[in-house]
Amino acid sequence: MFTSNQPECHFSLVLISLLSCTTNQARLTVSPSSSQFFEGDFVSLSCEEDDSSAGWTLRRNTSRRQRTQCGDGWGNPAGLTCNITVFSQDSGVYWCESREGPISNMVNLTVTGGSVILQSPVLPVMEGDDVTLLCKTKTTPSNLPAAFYKDGSLIRKQPTGHMTIQHVSRSDEGLYKCDISGHGESPSSWITVTGEHTTSPTVLSVLSSVRSVCVLVLLVLLVLLVRRYVHKKPEVANLSSVCPGFSTPDTALGNAGDAQAESDSTVIYSTVRTQPINYEQVTITTHRTRDFKPEPDVIYSLLPFQQK
Image (cartoon, rainbow, N blue to C red; front, side, top):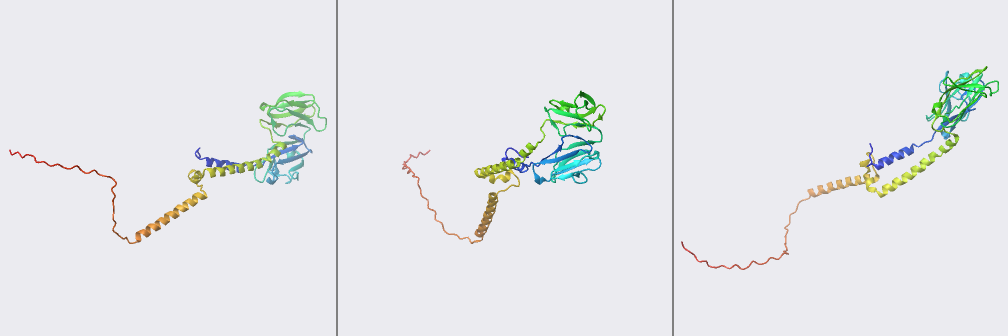
């Protein structure tokens, strides 16, 4: 566990996170933009991506086969686009997948042999946006009166077959369908409401430059790191005690020098101990620098001897 006393280790973590800064993303789009189609409709699905080297492939899951890619028994691949004339067996979940592993958003397409479909957003819609639903027939004009349902309950009837939900919120999320009297009922489609904007082609073009920004920031941080080490070399020399397993050339050189010096000291000590010991007379001369006062003259006197 790293603490505030280990700035170099924290700095290393930042560099690692920058090195892993990638923007390999893709977005699956459907044209025409709808989640429901009649049999025989022409549909174009495209993987809009920001890194052509990622190798994006369109795949799908249906009731018959799983994880098949465009051109493998269905669709005609054209670069990152797959064109397909749909039939009921083409109903399923579609997505883009790269050879590196990441996948795009998923879309659920429904193909019906009936005479009524509900054209609704195939991608998640942003909170606050307006959403228009269209109840459409295959052979007659699309402006017929229609009834719209959410989660099985009638919302409203519209005389022209259009219904607009203004300023959608999370409460508008649900399963929608429509009915045109005398023609039939459409399949149901789920509408997702999100609080974040979905990726657009403009955003993808912006994301393509993020990698360059990451590299630039990384270079700047490396320069700052070098300047930090230059101005605080003692701290760098002791970095091995802060980040276990880390060593610098100076530290390694210093350790090698200490080992060599210790080895040399051993050799010198051994040589001194093996030489014969000679004794010589040493004369020690002391110099008095302190003056001593002469003792005063002692006066002796005869004291009378008294005999008891």
